[in-house]
Image (cartoon, rainbow, N blue to C red; front, top):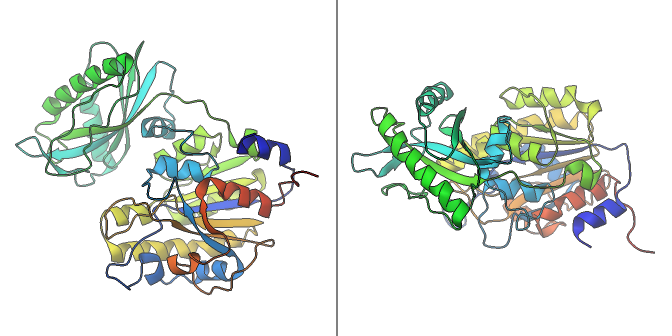
Length: 401
């Protein structure tokens, strides 16, 4: 019996509410040995209060030492083993913008980048263009046609776009063309099997034409592709947990993650305050709420320690609005760590706190990596977080006689 089957067997109905607050890339590192992380440096009275009344720990998104992408990181938080459900970012981006995906589609996450005269990448995110600029460049890419597939290009946000190839016999076992570095050229697409080789050939044709179309549009004069994916089969949150679930997120990818596991996507504006207001308005309609905050991750990726501290403090400020709704279980965590020191995602375990009437307090007065290291949750796989949530919400019965 796998974990999901056990949950289906043990789950019980209850009039309880679970809120999962995810500060993307929450975990960090000190800039100097013996110093404080971004979270430990921030003024977080509300997170500290949750640590005082709740139970803390560190979650491991995938496995020790494995650096996760946002997809695996969130799937783990939702209780899905990211090693069992390997889902490419492309399908998440496509679902996030509500693109009508079919079984003949290969979906891809695109990034606009800046290419130098030598064809090498000088900026992987093209200076983070405005979303309006993204739309303008996408319109130019829509003029491209390739042999063997229909092409769909859709804007997402800032430097991100969705590329979909629709055709027969396409595979998704294709490498990313983003080398994840500057000073080098984008990678050539290659397929791991005949169907994916067909996709790779189409990709290389598309990129060659895109470079020609965009050559005068610096800094958005190139594109890299990541996360090739077809539509996967995955059980829903309702099927596994019996929960009516909703997602309150700003960025499309996280809406896509939530839609993939059967959550309703609630229009939430674009600030923490509007997200909190949407949570309040929908409070009586759902059992489980996933609220996502992006900017702790993007500031970490930018290497801006001080700004990440500020974004953590802004996240902290919204917690009283959530607690005022009196959730039975309130969880705060991240999908992975994004230390400003590294300017990237990392493998470091993520601070986590669970608060509710059934939580066993640790006696902490501060929420940070150091405190969570010795908390009552221990260091646990993120895929077990939903077990903690269901149990604290009184939604799991006894196992065995």
